[in-house]
Length: 135
Image (cartoon, rainbow, N blue to C red; front, top):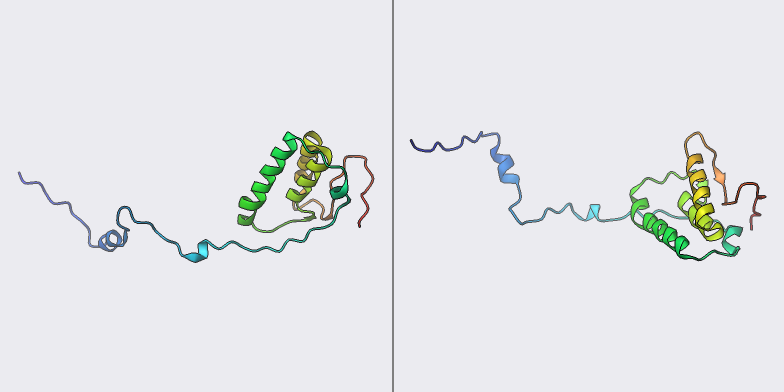
């Protein structure tokens, strides 16, 4: 018996012809490679001038936050309810209070950052501390 030739439907021919050749790359054009330029307003906070804690844990946390701000944040829509943003708040909290207190403050801020939460100026401060003055 002779081997039967595979039956190819006429409707599949354009699809087969449109596939790229093996080893070739598919380009989505320059529009997918452009990054959004989102303006960022930095609010001066008294926590920036306070004595900074600079140890290995703080440096690791700050490097992870910088990676998030550089690589992940531009992919997400801008929907910040607070000033400073949550990532900037975390960086200030880690610099001022260290890893343990900075993580607690960051977690508390992320819990408040929701549609039912507040909005506006909210600098990092430990529970029970007085409000930091605006400068």
